[in-house]
Length: 144
Image (cartoon, rainbow, N blue to C red; front, side, top):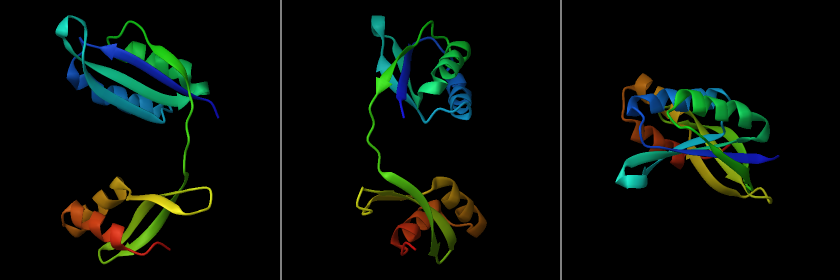
């Protein structure tokens, strides 16, 4: 699958507009969106917006970036990517069940694992305990 990186530098936009911009980019199919602080020309503080997407989403996401930000242009190019095989598993904790994102290598060995934020947040709210306790319990739980 061909992956495209789209980016633009912005130094004149109301910071309150970045959250809805990110939400709309994700809703339109962005795989990832990053806002990176940068010093722009003439020493102005700014933000570099970076978007990763499937090639088929490039035009749509570029248009959203142009329409919903103050940039006058975007750059894009193909990028290569190496990924772990991903899956989401459920683990049982003393507080309830939590989703864990797992990354495996080609041999099936678990290389990375991380609790899913929304799963932990909801459980922490329901149990009325700090989210860090849910994270810690999820990381100690046995994967099924």
